[in-house]
Amino acid sequence: MTADGKIATEKREAARFASECDRAHLEKQISLADAVLFGANTLRAYETTLPVTDSSLLRARQEREQSPQPVQIVCSATAEFSPKLRFFQQPVPRWLLTTPKGAANWMDKQDQFQRLLVTETTTNQVDWKAAFTQLSQLGFQRVAILGGSELVASLLAVDFIDEFWLTVCPVILAGTNAPTPVAGIGFTQAEAPKLQLLSVEKIADEVFLHYRRQR
Image (tube, rainbow, N blue to C red; front, side, top):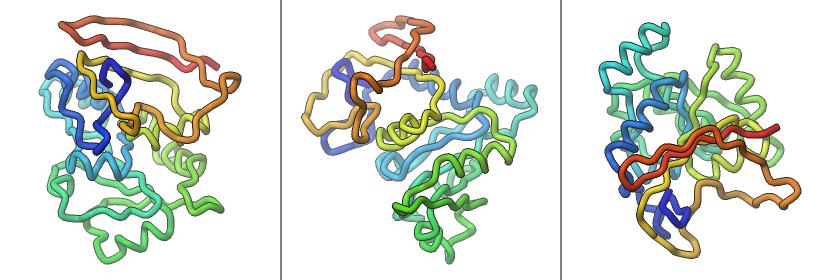
């Protein structure tokens, strides 16, 4: 995020302000995961995902007996995005986590996703408890959440996030409607999730923060 806490401009363009060091840091975190979750807006903005390409990280995954690449899971209740995005040409396992309505949009394009995970609440949204139960039953132990802010807010609201890795970048974007790392309806001060700072590292002009959720 920027020094003023934004993850994108008001136009919600893909964030390009982080350094190569931050990109390597992100790839390392992705390499540790069994699966990576991200929302439809994040997919639309970037049109791709970040695969693991570093040879040492790939060897480490093999030594841990993980698959070559973590499963890339797009999360969207409506699943309204183009199958022509570059994401669908990337050599990564692709899954879709959606509702029955969203799944219907991909019934004639099932070859684009290796698996559809379908859940639904009474408000036609993804049922996160049911979704994570499915992921657990499928053997996923470590899941990385890449964003966007609405997805992070939804998972934080049901207390499904254990750790936060935040990189503060030396740039100011401003903008009243520019997104921050967590969106949603927000919390009261009494209900606000509390974090424990585990580590701080400064590299050049960026600061890398690692927090654990306090319970």
